[in-house]
Length: 115
Image (cartoon, rainbow, N blue to C red):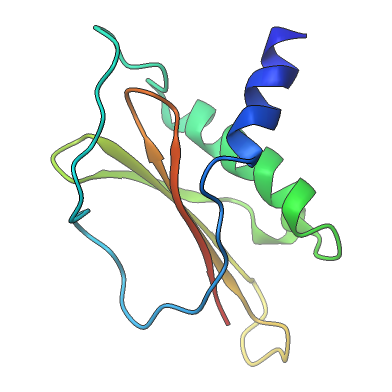
């Protein structure tokens, strides 16, 4: 139950979808660090959070087609960047999903789609 509430709360945190021209390597606003240890310590957990949010937010798109997700740490190891790429090149529906997650708090900092 706690896990479900956690994922639902993440769903409503600062999720936005818009086109980006370049990839983000550094966040230009101050990051919040509330806890002594990071809540999102593994690539696997960051990937599961992104998948859960994308599945709910983009209900008409089969997020499973965008696996395996690329997960890496950016911004001096403080932010998880999760990327889901469409496997079909030249497809009309080719998309690239991006999510930035604060490693310490689990807050979704950015969520956008490149079409």
